[in-house]
Length: 394
Image (tube, rainbow, N blue to C red; front, side, top):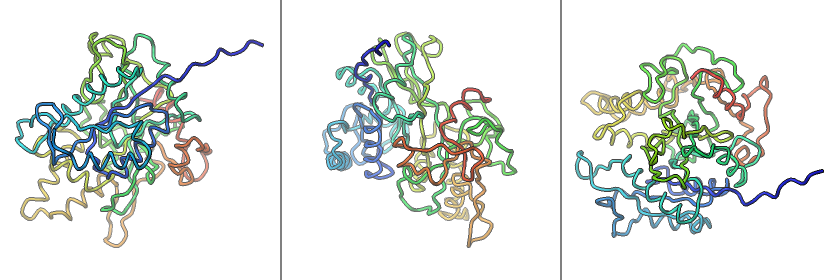
């Protein structure tokens, strides 16, 4: 029999992210450890410390207490060689005035700097993701070789590798608690009207389960279980592409221009992005306070949350209790029929991807997740979501 060719070393990939460690430094270190274990070669972690704002796109010379705390946490976890923690390039304040930061522009500056650093280290691809997102390999292997094969499937002319995202459905009911959602949450919404096995998602009587008025990223209207945040995925950029640059936070462009128009964008196979937005109430509350002053995403939940907070803070608006109630109803999908025991309306029939309780994150993310039968009690098999995403209605 013929011998298989000797495989070379895995394709080297890096990750760039901008973080203010909102969920806590311990959760951020967990996020970094996860990606290093997954096979990411180097993480360029740009730490934004609001107490030390850099000006004109240059790193501040003042010491950042948050950056120092993150660096200390990485050292204690043995991650400081794989994770380079740097000050974020906040730049000058936008028209909102002092105290405000153009977050998208800051992320673009950080990603541009990461491209330069990754090229100097001879990396092949750079993923641009956030600190509330996890790269997830859908196959049985969770290592550098499997991650390398996922990017190697891209065509030679493709420089933007798009990764479909799933959005977490929060179920942890202690609202004020700052918990590690990566370990506790197991429900994810798919951006199609199908379950993971291709069965139709049953129509629910509660309109909160559906997008109304659409989302600029998809154009969907009244059809899919609601993504409260984006649902147009994130991307990796091929580093040997001339003129590679971030194009917003979701895509890369190059000297050839827009990747999709240049037929230079591929969809990742065997790799999805798990997104955990708004799992911490305090982070959600702060985010939409800031957006009230520097609003750029005026659609869907972003608009509704911003206006709900404004209304609640007005005289007679109900204050913090009203804000928390809005959060429970829209983010957690809780129906507070009485004060004693809120009832959850989310069920496996209305969540496109549901991981059973036995598939705890530390198990299925380490590659030992066991498939469940579609008819078994407790849910549907997670890894089949990709088939539904390819063949289901967009």
